[in-house]
Image (cartoon, rainbow, N blue to C red; front, side, top):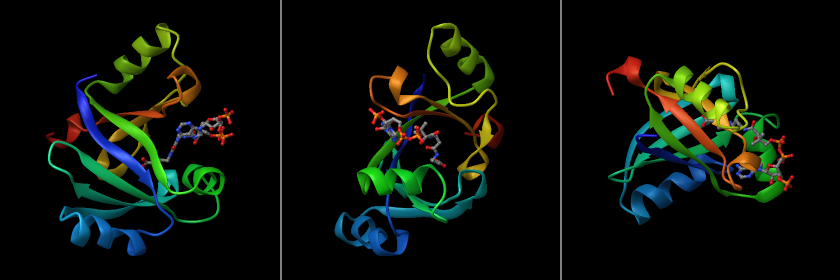
Length: 136
Ligand code: CMX
């Protein structure tokens, strides 16, 4: 893993929570976009050395809707920036880590992403996030 790219935070509503990050904490909003493959709308906030990704469900279906239902709002995942995501996935699989998919999926900002099951990562949902095709 190279670095933490972002921390994912589940929120019921970006509209209701974004003011806290921008006006109360004084951070900068970078972008808002829909990630159809994950059924979420996301807002990226610049927190200096790392981004915060606010995740709002686009319907009652999907991982974020389920998380909010079971656990409420809060930290959802930590994303590592990687290059060559398929090789990283293969290495982790070889080391016994359970991946949540066999192939990377399209994520926010044109990244390719894959998730590691929290059960094989000591209770933390980790994401691998490869933006090497995007000049980052
Ligand atoms: N962090 C840590 N543990 C988590 C978790 C999370 N975010 N979400 C679920 N878990 C735990 C649950 O507490 C539960 O543990 P127990 O069995 O001890 O109760 C276990 O994982 C199974 O959870 P579940 O509620 O039954 O949920 P599912 O099995 O249906 O799904 C998960 C859990 C992680 C496999 C699913 O959320 C997933 O596939 N996530 C990957 C995709 C994703 O999260 N997309 C949204 C982000 C999109 C983006 O960043 O763009």
